[in-house]
Image (cartoon, rainbow, N blue to C red; front, top):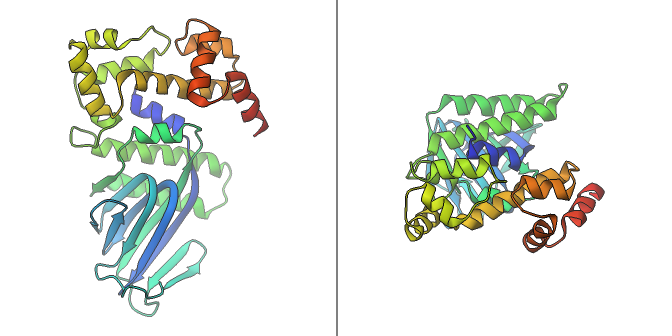
Length: 299
């Protein structure tokens, strides 16, 4: 059975960027702005505060894991932050190992922190289907995965990049598994917890070439068109046909990057003719399928 969450993570193509070990003592603060890249943290010992833009501070405890698929600005700091305006104390004691706060005081927190990138050209669309914050407590599997990523990052073993990419995919999926349900923010995870919407999403992913309309999806979900439309938009965050088109275009981009001819791509993503596909693709992407293929090949 097709799994839309796995499909999205696979198309996002998370790639390794930075992984580091961090210890801190007394008063310390780390601030990052305009990252636009996924961030994760596993707190091994101690407590601290994480504040993401436009959200209330989250108190993290030992055993907590946090994933932010697209973090633009955030701060992490000791429970008692340093005075406003004071210079941050940050020391790299060895490659990939950082000390925050007073370097001479006993360490009060220990964490593993990482950033990664998305290889997909549709990362904005795909990341929007995921929760904007994942906070999990007491999941040892997540802690083990972060340890494995940190260990692999610190070594230069054969096929290191492939191993890290697969570990990151597993980390994302394991984190998303832990927070699925109706309490999630609007997006794919929340919709997959809806017994009437989940089969619809699976079918969209399983057979994007099939003729799809809001009316046919509503009939399949056993709802009136208006009820289905409102529920889908409320749970997923976009309208049914916006989701269908977005997913088809994400698949089309991937197929074009694999050097599949536009005529074949149009059939595989549900367009009756190459010309109809070209018009839809150009409207969505801003260039024709052929131009997109040439631009990607040059890049």
